[in-house]
Amino acid sequence: MDRGDFVRSVLDYSKELVMDSDRYRNWVLDVVLAPIIADVGGRDVTGHAVLSANKSAKGAIIAQSSFLVAGMAEAVFLYEQFYVTCNIKKQDGERVRAGMVLIEVEGKEQDILKAERGILEVIARMSGIATGTAKIVSSSSLLVACTRKSLFPFIDKKAVSIGGGLTHRLGLFDAVLIKDNHLTQLKSEAEDYVKESLERGWKSKANFVEIEVSTEKEALAAAHAYSSLVGETGRVMMFDNMSVEEISAVLEKVNAVSGADQIVFEASGGITEKNLASYAVSGVDVVSMGSLTRTFPSVDIHLEMIS
Image (cartoon, rainbow, N blue to C red; front, side, top):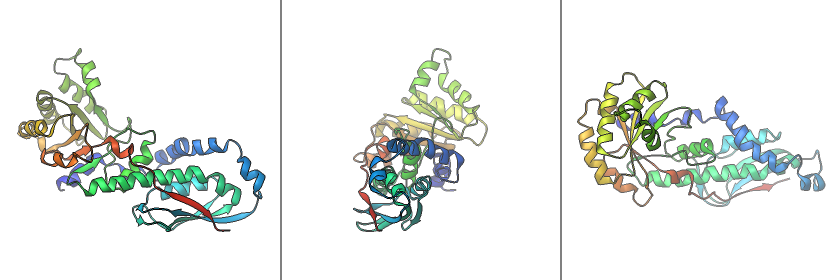
């Protein structure tokens, strides 16, 4: 396994973000479908007043700009909740341009239109994130991961994955990430707080155990602590808000510690599209960027009724 594949095996869980997964499907129902239903509010007043209750109709969701497609499976699943069937014309990860049809829909005209806005927003949001992520990934020799900085982490992380990025942890439930606030609290309990935190985290049997470090002392303490832990759980060290020069200097010493090759090294904090390239020489394996799920605009799409 090369280094890139090793890092992906620790920090990418996109295989869990599929509609066949109970956790993901239930999350889409609870978090994504709920506001669509709330928007309807019992009934779509306009649709009930203007449209026939039982008339069947067809429509098409059409791109109005060029972008990378994401959210097709989610759109189909959501439309199914309104008894609308879909025919996917473009798959996640495909490039499209204005005028191309993404999905054809068929069902009662009232059902198609009352679900329209919410489902278009899902596709537009996910496609925007996927498109922006793909641009970032193509410009860097480093692997790029997203963070949990989002109100819609599952669909946003899936979109990042479609764009070529890594999901990192999916939530608080699947991985241990020991941050500065955890360490601050632990300092009052243990002199060797870094080692103590990792040993406690290791007992959780999480997908991986990561610690945030901001000094050479913490980084070396973490490397030595990791070397004493037994098991196949992923090990990740995050350099938080440290300069490229600081990371390079610390990593030179950390890499001399036995077992350091089993640690994934991550940089985070203040990393943007403009300064991303500079981190390639720092020696880290991956950078995590909150901007992947917070800054890219939704793409432009619309629903056009055919009959």
